[in-house]
Image 1 (cartoon, rainbow, N blue to C red):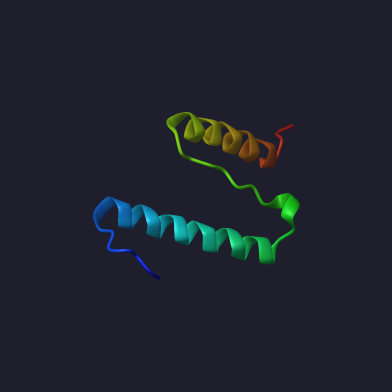
Image 2 (cartoon, one colour):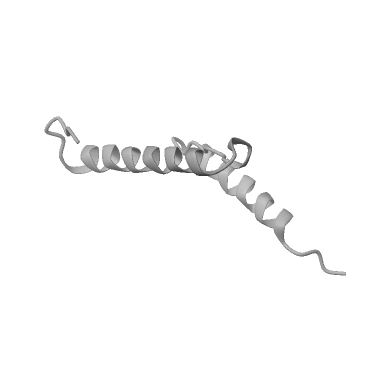
Length: 66
């Protein structure tokens, strides 16, 4: 990987982006596209929305009590 001399937070951010890109590509190769969800987290609002989506998703998979 070519880091262009970045250090500190910029280097960490770039590495995290690379890692998540690899994970996404591996998921796309391994699973049907309709079950893969890519969620941005560039802002606090993005992250809050992601939490709500994930909470709804988890709730939909819980066994329903009778």
